[in-house]
Image 1: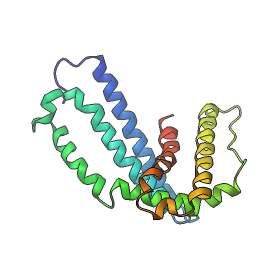
Image 2: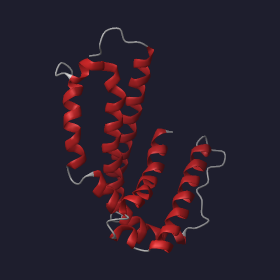
Image 3: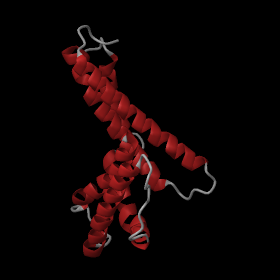
Length: 187
């Protein structure tokens, strides 16, 4: 139930929330499909990305919807107040997002980095496709991630994830790994 006097900006916020919800559902269904596929290898990285993306997506969703309810949204009259309280649990359940970023950073430097090195110069092609622009953007993101990952591995080796003092600096690499997923699901 929406508050009275809803204006056009409310529809815009609701649209943002629906877009975010659709993106999170798409990532979840994609992960389920990967788990059901008998040829899929271990999906630890994909699960980490999906968990991180989903919980952050829920935070963004609540951020979009809270202004719609205004100050009344902070009371028990609307369910959004309970959702905000419960959201804190979602970031803790099965590992905080910081731990998810740590695991992703570890996998990026040790497992994915060498695989990306073998694929250097290989790009997805979508010439003539209606999704050509999205594929081009994803290729650029992947190239940027690969360049930064190579530099990190060359300079810091496994210290990027083993030393607690530098881990937060490299969490940005983890976030960069989630960006192509986030961007692809929104296009």
